[in-house]
Image 1: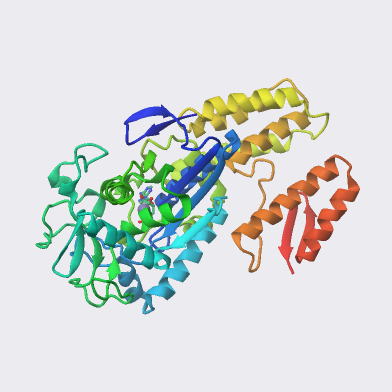
Image 2: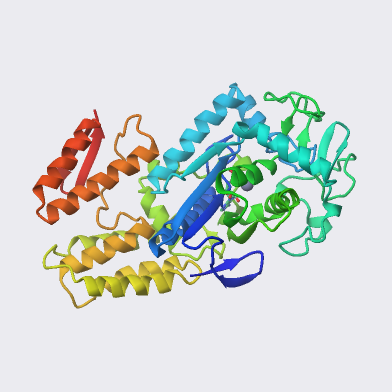
Length: 469
Ligand code: AMP
Ligand code: ZN
């Protein structure tokens, strides 16, 4: 498989550190507001990447942080804290805001068929680890204390700007808002590892540390959560392109200074979704959410289809007209699939050959648009309906467009966690397979197991639906 790597600026053959295993890290949301559909473009493309890697045969472990502390709108001690801003806006505590928007984020993900990562860790869950890392960085001369804060000293690195030469005047690019000068810093690019004497002393969440009562800077969370759950060698790190600088650049600086060896080999960045007026941003006030699309009558999966039609390394412009075109194409595709008769024996040789073609196409720098074209091609294959449906079902393990089950509506899954949803859906799929193979004893056994978990199955024209007692 080939993937463009922001670090080497070329399309590289993807080779994980340990054969057959992939350690994947994704920067998670800053939970001070709903995710906009631009954020979700990034998560959709990362989801396809993860599913493709699994389809390819890798054993993937994926971790994601939840930024619930420390994300300032500027990178030094100058910008307002985003979480605090959200809490003030809604007259709630920071933790209440974090819980509400974390749940909202995963609810959006479920609607878009985005898989729940293997590990999800809030930034506030790893404070002792940050303290340990910062202590080592200070001891090894990579960090210094100034004005009550601890800073990373970027002048200690041979090559700080790993993703290319960043013009000093562009230092504000990834930090979104204007950057005021922080006079504590020795070098312009230095960044805060730990705050104790912030300009903003109304911070709600603070912890004791060797440098006084305070809170971590933004970048330290991703380095730590990744190393804690995925080990010292990371195969792929993902995020939106705005994260490349300074967030990912700073993650690399502190992780490699701490570990003493190269850390992550592949950097996967998704280009932005823009609206017709320019970049989408939560601070603009009104912004596009999945709920808004639903209110306007759109199926969230049609938005997923819209995203998959474009390459992740090209900026994408959102307009309702563009979305309507995607909806029309998606509807046409699923209608044609629904008309395929489920008859005949599945031709396994053909399935394998088609899977290989799909892998070659999509595996060339995650070309999801060609993956969709390939689904249209399957409709024209000279084979029986059962084989066509089977192949499409296989491709949909990566695309996740409900191609065989387009009317699947989000149903009430009660208090079931996303991991349990996955287990239940796996059992339902196994039961469907058992029934197809006329293995009634196995199908009944699975039904009993689901019953024991309180899952009620309902056969509908659109397939099996399930609810929890
Ligand atoms: P945030 O919640 O602001 O930390 O952002 C969550 C993710 O969305 C990060 O990976 C960002 O890089 C990404 N992101 C932010 N804006 C956009 C956009 N307009 N289009 C695509 N991805 C974005
Ligand atoms: Zn991150």
